[in-house]
Length: 328
Image (cartoon, rainbow, N blue to C red; front, side, top):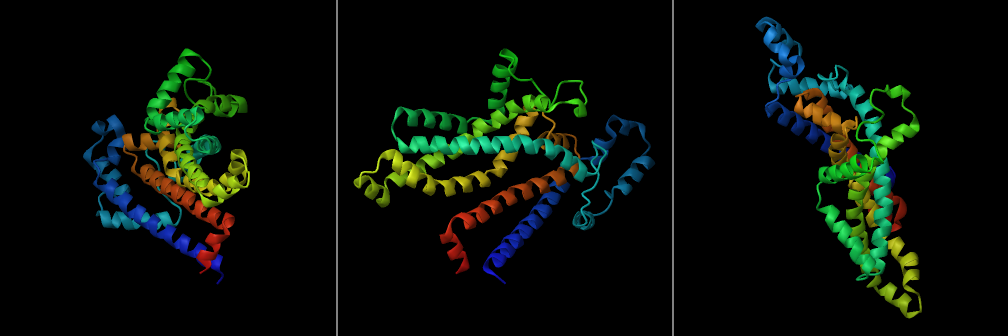
């Protein structure tokens, strides 16, 4: 077995172990939570059904069985790809997650790309000229947004850019009253831009601050001082040395930020009424849709773990020193 194969096997084994822990913990917490799936399914109609009908519903969903037995049945179904049926959507959980995530994926991909690129180059600019007006402006921007709640930024942008200026739609993924299949690409993009911009301006802060600190360390390193003694300009040191030494930490931070990206998408989609997976998460929690809530928890955990694993694999592909260390 080759070195890369052993490394991938170890990573996949660790991922499987973490997912098993997530399944156990998520099911335990949901079982202990004051959620009543029967009330969520029936709503106000629960007052109109007989106790016998209510008992049949409980037996059909297996809620009359002990938690250990319900967990065993749930894991067996989960292993076969069956996450159950959503109560509020009356569809298989897998289908609900697939449809909602396809909408959220475009939003998160745009925000992730823009925040990574802009944050990286803003950090490079600030670190290359520490103490300058540009550096102070970038740090002020980053520190302000890093401490600001996502929903607050989203509401401010919604009020200013949508309500007051009218540049962007107020909500939804398309014009109100128009069927989804009739919405054009440009209309979808127009409704998508403000939520994506909200996530981008927040995600820039962490990348910019981290890259700035790494850039400052580069200029204080021995090789940068040697290059400067040979007559290399500050811009030359930045492009020939700084970019190479700050790229890997920025990529690691960017991929490790999948969890924050997903959490920010939940809040942004709720503010802008964007029909993505984040909004479905809030609805599942508020309305007690236990199968959908468990499915989203598992999917989001897999999403975050995959981001961390991609960061590790990217390190192996880019940095030969790490490949040598892993081989040893």
